[in-house]
Length: 431
Ligand SMILES: [Cu+2]
Image (cartoon, rainbow, N blue to C red):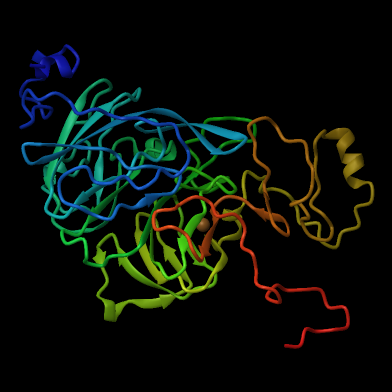
């Protein structure tokens, strides 16, 4: 039998009687699986316990568990990670189990969950279960409801899931630093009856923001407003997974905001309904139609729609600076300014100086020398040319004939003849 002393790493005696002692007793720790895969993992089937329809975490995965004497046991490890934000750029972040954000925790209403949290960070931490109804002492506020988890130690959280819905987890310890470094994750509680509010596709992501100087790898954690990497699950366009959807599917997309500002999340091509917040589900009669759901800091929203309009539908934050990658914010507006040779002359003084175009940005196609590990500000290529996006942007791809659990990128939409905007050359199509 593995003793508690062994699994917490040798200093057991000093810890007896502290919060680290749990009803898990001498049980061995469940495995803390880890991955560095940045692609959406196929839906994991619940191995045991109550059945549910799993969520798809954009560029992420769900945390495996084990059942032990009626408890669903999970193991999170808080640790430094390297996260690829998009091909060509990596960031030194803090996360859980190899990734920022951490793996999605999925469980079922009524489940008793036991979550082991091992701290491999260089400083103390805690985990707060945002939005969850639980005993005060399990709420994870360092100093207020528990002692902090020192580096190298493992704490145990135990509570029963009272309500199904969409929640988050994040530290309540040195928060400014730990959230600015990417420590966060999603916690989904499924309904006990899998037919309640059933959807065909259920996606989730968390919004986080970083200030990473071009050419560097580590966020400046003291930044309060001027972030330059606006991410979904610590990824930016063109690194964010598309959302492949089968025609006719009922679709739910859940998103939470752990940045320092609000994000109006906008979906093209559909009128969706706002179906839930982290406070619970909105009764059907009280849901309201939207094309943009604004998400304040510390909030989650779930939207739903029936995918009855095929196409490639842009899905993005509507703040235009949030659909860009690292950029200088001090560039003067030169629209209308004659600047013949200006850039050339300034270049003699400041190598790599780039002027904003006098006819607008035109930066989507502009080649500018970039430091290593730096993404272009506006980037990506679509079937019709440069997409001129970055940051919080991806595409909902609604297609006929996808298989039920097929989440592979179906490629670009093939528009039916006569349904694409076209150049006027003196004729219009008559049909
Ligand atoms: Cu935004």
